Image (cartoon, rainbow, N blue to C red; front, side):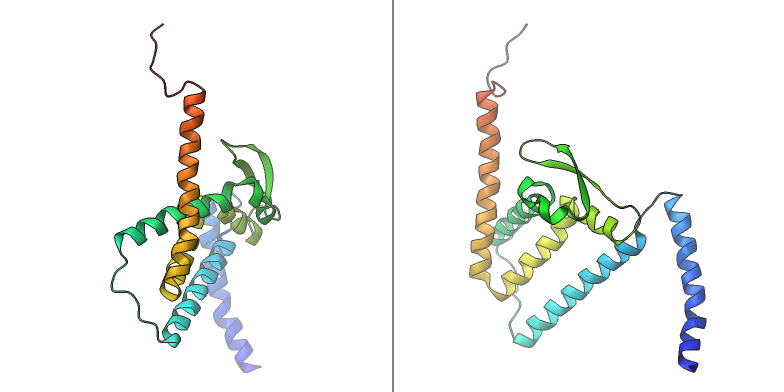
Length: 186
């Protein structure tokens, strides 16, 4: 029991410090600091495990990534992060953490985080934020690129093609709706 007592004695001031930081930071709003800390821990754990696996495999890291591959992976990261965060078809992934609020632009939905202040709040914020998801998606693409560059290029090409198609759909809609025609003076 001596070890448990030592942990308890050391942990009490740390917990009190954390409660004070949360109280002073949140200003009474339900912010998921513990959940966010957990998400950061999961991210660091996954990156560490992936890095250890790459190292154990004996794979050499590329000296540099060619500009074409970097561009391909960047566009694919944008498209996949947005697909996960905003697409109606991926709403079942977000549903345990969010509530549908309505349409949000072309083929996108607006959702609100369902629970406030806990782990579900942190996950809900992550899953509805394409900017937040981009870090996770980009990291996954990089590790996949290091371990299987050809397959990763192919997967990234798919998402990049979808992004290009999205742009063309917006251009087409603009033309159809007269948004890209010559302006007329009234």
